Length: 593
Ligand SMILES: O=P(O)(O)O[C@H]1[C@H](O)[C@@H](OP(=O)(O)O)[C@H](OP(=O)(O)O)[C@@H](OP(=O)(O)O)[C@H]1O
Ligand SMILES: Nc1ncnc2c1ncn2[C@@H]1O[C@H](COP(=O)(O)OP(=O)(O)O)[C@@H](O)[C@H]1O
Image (cartoon, rainbow, N blue to C red):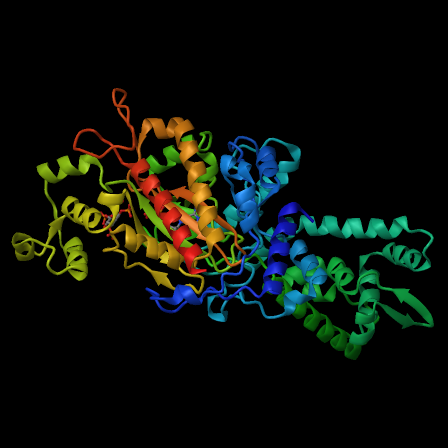
């Protein structure tokens, strides 16, 4: 088991033991609810933050498999190097084989978990599992061992082209099956390793029998395995009496999984009779055949359910921005409608000091006549993620908007409607009369009524762990209001607040080293805060659609107020405010507990 799997399951196991309270909350704002919180200190595991520059698939994998950072309350205060280096919880997709083995290892997982996703929020089964967790940027794979992964990615792309844009229609069964088969390679490797373990124990009679059976050929072997499955209780007992001889079933569930891995996995996609036929011998009579078929199917159903219940969780949601602009692909990447300005920024960022704070950029893709930016899914591996989108900077419009508004003021009724909905008294008499406002006026009003102009950032939206989306932060402006929102968002969990604070300090440091930051005016970009009930937490920079290079003669400071013409974005003003307010929230959360 890899480090990240250990980290993930250990934190889950611990959550089971400590009975971490559900983070669902129904009432917002939660006046006084924080006093009632069960703030049991959960262990916090995240993965190290060093990230590949995207030019090398191998180093990307290395970065992914780096050691786990411990963000338990005690270790946060103890480990200075975390504060120095920051952290990165690179999203993970547990492979099906890891999923199954962890299930077998930890029967307590079958118990009801406080973090269990509500039934109605469960994504459709097996949409995510066919995607490789380790991203390989398009066109940059050169090593032999990466060729297969690249093929899979291409396969996924091809598969995605079969899906209508924006549609949730599942992939064509044959395509999914072939994708799955290719993706299942790690499971096959596991199968091989188990068999070789058996071979190595040559002195063991039972293992010799197993070895002999192995050489019978898959058809007979499968039949034999089915024979040993005739009685559930025998099967679960680990050995069966057959013809007076004891046959060892090395690991009842696992061996079945291994021998029928592809069948069980593909059964989710296609219960084809061809697959089912494969496991029966020609000599069986129809009745036996039907009986076996039934057992086989119910077993497959069980396996599928098991895989499904342990599949990588994703509760993907687009929190802010233009609705429908961003979506999760069948392959597990985030696809965002193409914007050249953003694509160029992302490309540069992949080899910048900020790369560990930005979702990995896989290039772009054309689908159904539309171009999309391909991004790493920042919610992958998080269970019932709690998300907050903070738009950074002291303004959310480019200076060009001002000249545009002056030269050709287009009056927008949609923006007027949005404005009136929040504050009917906001439009001027003239704006009321024309029932419209310019975009610049609307954006300036948004900035002034929220904390953008004063604090250098604003909260755009929050998704709580129960999936409840909160977007009404139009008038969240004062430090006290923001602090209270931070406490609500984190449910006053000090170690989460501290992890966020630590991450922002690391970002602050990286920004100072970043050439990109030095040379760009960052407008409308967000910090995406994500954590979950297993105490993984992280912060990412997203949305570079309005981020532009500064003219050669302009050197931005990012920490001084904006006046027209100086192009300052106030990004560092926002970051400093956020760090300060997180500090205040930590203090208040500490006092409450
Ligand atoms: O958040 P609300 O109050 O709804 O206002 C939105 C945001 O400011 C958008 O910025 P962002 O994309 O940074 O969230 C902006 O898109 P732009 O990026 O085009 O400025 C929208 O302009 P229109 O897209 O023109 O409606 C504007 O209506
Ligand atoms: N890489 C990503 N992983 C997960 N969620 C994302 C990612 N990129 C964007 N999102 C989601 O989509 C929302 C809007 O993204 P953003 O890039 O700001 O779009 P827009 O340009 O339309 O404002 C974010 O608030 C977040 O919820």
